[in-house]
Amino acid sequence: MPLIQLVIILVVVGVILWAINSYIPMQTTMKKILNVVVVGSVVLWLLSVFGIIGSLQGIHIGK
Image 1 (cartoon, rainbow, N blue to C red):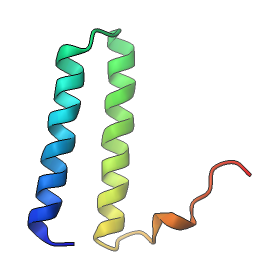
Image 2: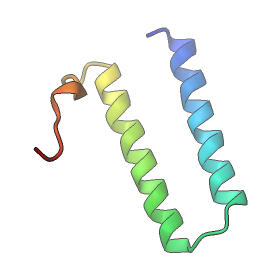
Image 3: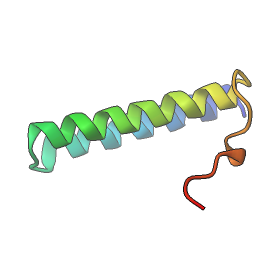
């Protein structure tokens, strides 16, 4: 994946998260949970993109 595409994706995710946090009214607890889930997902995705962890396609949730 080209570096410019990676940066664009990170900026888009950041802007979307900022917009949700700024303009959608929700409890502080829910915002914190949303932020942790999004940041955690982005970190796992970045680790996968850079090859630090294996492909995320092998991870199954549930049956």
